Image 1 (cartoon, helix red, strand yellow):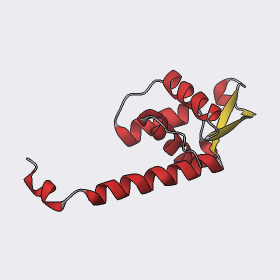
Image 2 (cartoon, rainbow, N blue to C red):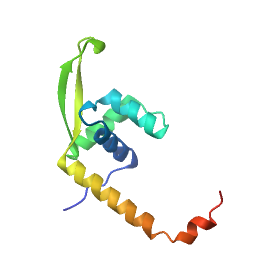
Image 3 (cartoon, rainbow, N blue to C red):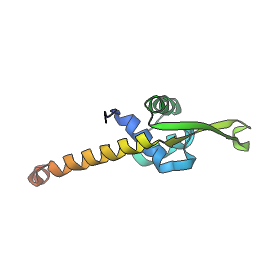
Length: 112
């Protein structure tokens, strides 16, 4: 299978959609990213990443129900697709393999 590569921010957004499961929409994703990373993130940057992820087939979306707190406006909800799950698994395996390949003495020589 040819792998589609993700940028760091796309990966973070995809991971966040996976964390939130059925509660993943623009604002909730933005808030979770800020909580998890301590980084300030704009909703528009999250929406742009979600659009790219949807084009790549990593997430799918649908319009949720209207809610009182949004003045009756509907939310676009997101979920990780099967391809997105496989991609996250491949990324995790690659990162783990690379971390494990670092010689242990490297960590003992790094300044604290």
